[in-house]
Length: 355
Image 1: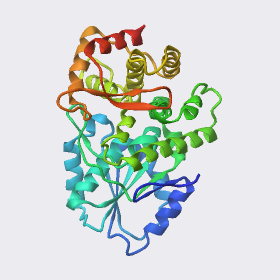
Image 2: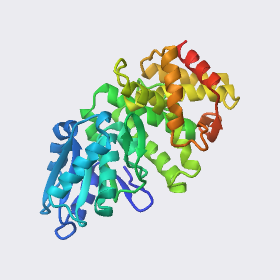
Image 3: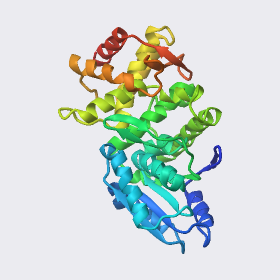
Image 4: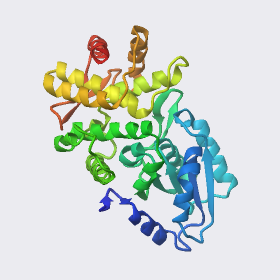
C-alpha cells in the first residue's frame, strides 16, 4: 500500500515499515532504542516485530499492564523512571508497539522526558491503526476522565503492519471499526457505503478500508493540527461516547466498555441529535442506527445511569464557557461543529437508542 505523507512524518504500511526501520536504525543514528509495550503486545506482537528489526543499537523493552485503567500519570511516571534507570538520553528513540493506550501513553512519555525524544508509533490494534497512532495526540486519563492530560506532538513515523490484526479478538476488531464508521459519516459518504454489508469483506478489502480511513483522518489533521476548528469533526460520537466510557470505567457494577463500543453508542445518540435538528433525514438516521446496531451489542441504561453520564459531559475537552458542544452530522459524509444540545434531547436520544 502507498505510504501517506503527513505534516513532518510519514505513515508506512506492511513491508515498507521494516524497510524504513532498517534505514533509520543504522549505527550512529540513535544512542539507544526503547520499546514501550503492554503485557498483551509483548506476548502476541513483539516477537514478530523484533524478528523484523536488525540493529546494532542497544535495545531495551519497557512493559506495563494492559488496559485503559492503566493509562494514567502513575504509569507514565513508572515509564519515566524506567527510562532514567536504563540510561535514556536525548539521542534515544522510543518505539511504541501496541494499541491506543500504548501509543497515547508512550507518545506522552516520549514527548515530555528530557523535554522530548523522537518516537515511532507501531499500532497493533485496528483502533490504533485508524485513529490513536495518527495525528499527534498523546496523553493519559485523569481518574476515569478520558485524555485530560496530554500534548499534541507528532511521531517521526507511524508503521502500520496489518498482520498484527490476526492477533486481535473479535471485540477488539469491532472496537476499531467504530472509528472507521465515523470517518465515513463525517467525511466520505462513498466510504460509509462500504459498511452497509460487512458479510463479504475480505482481508484485502479491510486493508484498503484501513488505508482510506487513515487518509481521511490525516487530511483533516493536516488542515487543523491543533484542533481549533475542522479537526473537531473527528470527535463525532465522542462527546457522548467518552462520557459513557468514563461512567462504565469508574462504576464497579458495570462491565467496562471498550472505546469503540462506547463511541458506537455515542454516534447513534449524536445522529439522533442531528435528526432532531433537521440536519439529517429520518431514513439517514435509521440507516446509521441499523448499521451500528448490527455490529455492536445493545447496552442497557437506567435513568440514574443517564443522569450520571449527563453530569460527566461537562468535562469534555471541546467545551467552552461551561457549555457542552457537540459535533453533529449534516447529511452522511458531512459534519458541523460546536452545536449545543439540551438535556431533554439527550434523555430522548437514550430512550430512542434503547427502543
